[in-house]
Length: 357
Image (cartoon, rainbow, N blue to C red; front, side, top):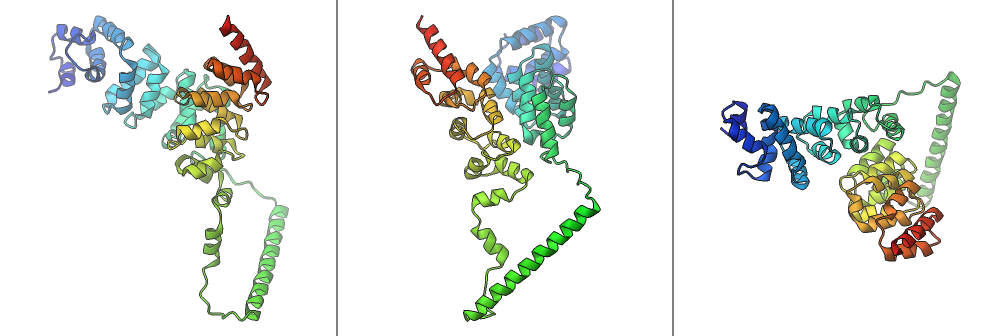
């Protein structure tokens, strides 16, 4: 019987529980992460307070690693409730949301949370929303969800990204007649073209039984990647943005539909090098740059931060926030760079002067 079972069955003396609650028992940090939820649940008020204090001082790095990989659903649910209500911590909750073993209730609790970072993570995680459709309704009912994120969820629904189908628009009799006539006209034109092509082949002495690649296959072979993407629906583009190749992402990031472009930067396959390149693009939607500028993982790389600050398309609030991270030598270059936003250039000048004082 392991330690967790002994705690559940009340087979440990209180002094052992006290030692466990204050992490003074000889266990590895990973083992404590597994056991402390049970100590809290079955302990006295004093033991609960000790566990709370121990978790406050616990190594966040070790705890994040544990929460991403843990398999015990009771433990995962405990930490979701603990870090959402008792000791709110968005980083630790997001680690739980990344864990495929987390029970559905963890996602539902997070979706009802008032913490902006958690709500942003959920709304931007299209794959997670597709697996848990109920999350969308919980998020939309959350009064703390800002207007931008609500609009984004509505776009997901509108374009069928989450599996919903748009109701077909009812056509009037005149529209039906117009479409029918147009289709008949196109069919006649295609027939004339086919007959003309056949006549030319006979004139050139081509044999009627010559082996030919079917026309639809030939067309598919000759299409460039760009042309193929152009022919896709919004939902198909989003799927390629999330699961496709680097080449597909490099084209889709420029798509006029911002939902498609956002799916690119949310792809689990995207690399830091790609993000750095996107951060410097001036032909991407500003929401893409805003997303990068709010993503802590991306901002760990200085080149991405610098690319965002230098990009005049970056929203001013994001650029200004990141400006404090810029090194002095790069600040000097920003002050002289007429190609960047005037707002950022002036802010860089003020920051440079304040650092010299």
